[in-house]
Image 1 (cartoon, rainbow, N blue to C red):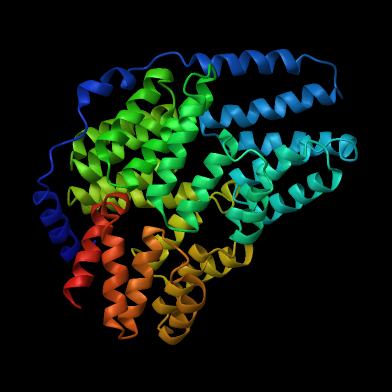
Image 2: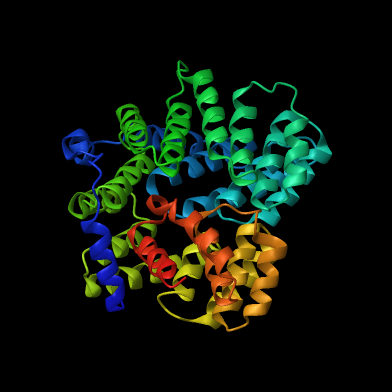
Length: 427
């Protein structure tokens, strides 16, 4: 790490005047090992269905579904591949009579960031025509991931009930990602939550409550975000996304690296996925620990580049190649692959930044103007856009986008915030 980054981080950490949001006593109980009853239930159901006679497609569908559910708790990527294999076997038998397996295959592809394949499965499901409502919901999901906002809008508009839970959560996503209207998205998510808050389904409750926690954090409504995560954990102490959210609040807002590290250490024991090594590298940077930073970053790269993950970690691999590793050729390769498979404004922001890092500023500016500016509101993309305009000598536009990125300082974290501040000082 460069010394200037450590000095910037030191200033950022020291200048935080906000009162802490997190309190270790609130979540201490959730860091104590305890039996995961939901995982145990999944295991029992797996045993039951695995004892059925070979060739039973109902049993195989159930087993595939249970593998996908188990992945959420174990983080073992082989579970998703096992589910894929079983779903494909089932699909050879019922692909002309039922769209359900196509949707399940599409859902697995979304998890693995294989969005073009997911689109093919959804198109096949639409052609069959049964359970069209469920298929149209996934048509929206896949279209959003592919950056096809027009098809996503058409799918959403075709839904008759504009007050249903399923409609509201998708309209919220459209407002956030396409329109860049986070406040409107939050209102829609709150309406969706009101629809199911008394529902007996804990998984549904935890999903929307944790998503609200994310939205509130992005809107700098930190206490509401923290409250959501605690309420999720009170329902399911093994809902790891909520614990990770608290760790990020502790780090990015409270600058409480020690407690953030404790949470992440627990998560690594219970849910070993590459994400936590990346987070630990950021914590190490926050403590000016260059040795720890390099160790955790190396561990993340070794894990995330496992072929079984496919493109699931491309966003982070790109950022590391473009930044820490200073590998312009590699970041261009990742960006080109992403645009080929997922031509979203965000992916184009990577491509533009990759060309900029390869000293092709005019090409980067062209891509930004055509595909990114005013079309992508992700904090990383705002930062890349600002830096590209800065490289092209358009200081006014650079300042506008970097200031917009700075408004998402919490979401980006202290390391990126420091880079934004340094860039703004030069304009």
